[in-house]
Amino acid sequence: MNVADPPALLAQTTQRLRTAGCVFAEEEAQLLLAHADNETQLAAWIARRVTGEPLEVVLGQMTFCGQTVFVDAAVFVPRRRTEWLVRQTVAVTRAGSSVVDMCCGTGAIGLVVAREVSDIRLYACDIDPAAVRCAARNIEPLGGRIFCGDLFDPLPAALRGTVDSIVVNAPYVPTAEIAHMPPEARDHEPRQALDGGADGVDHHRRIAAAAGEWLRPGGHVLIETGAAQAGLTAEALSEHGLLTSVASSDELAATVVTGRLRGR
Image 1 (cartoon, rainbow, N blue to C red):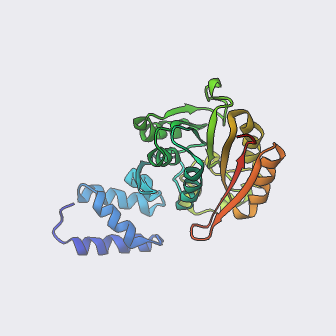
Image 2: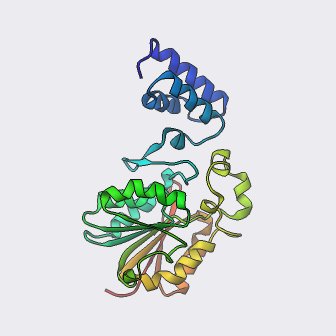
């Protein structure tokens, strides 16, 4: 954006965001200035951000694992910790595999896996029509297919027993803890994208119960979970015959539980 005094505008924007409580005010100000077409748009964006609207939604996009991802209003914004889930998925996914991005939100996970692993057949699903519309923008250009419905319900029946990797970032915030989340998540993201039930593991249990029917022998289901809930997530997978492992990243404060279907 061309302005007469960029440093002054950056300083003003940073101060406005800092006053509103934005922790990374200067970095956010730089992004807003870099993407705004003019000062009128910048002013509108600042007004939205200071009310707590997520920066990624204001900009309409974000960078996730080095890839540009479109982000629409009222859709769950990918967290940096989920990079760990992507890394774990890429590590067990071979070229030409079938991959399901479950509870896909923006489709960011599937998008990155499709960029990192060649020739995968990508399927994504979410119960929220707004998320499905957003995910379509991100993954359909890569040949991904997107479905709307509850967990496995909308997937093509022909996929049963053939999926190599099911990657899951389902809601895992315990219901009682949602009230303590930052306002930009609590007030601007759909509750169904946050609420994991009383202990946060309701969706993980439902996925664990059905995953074996969809995986090929030797296939994997990978679930992002909380450090305090990893044992419960692993228990859910083990109870349904999957061989489980837990991997954590101190750097990203992230935990992934992986279940492997016995077989080749």
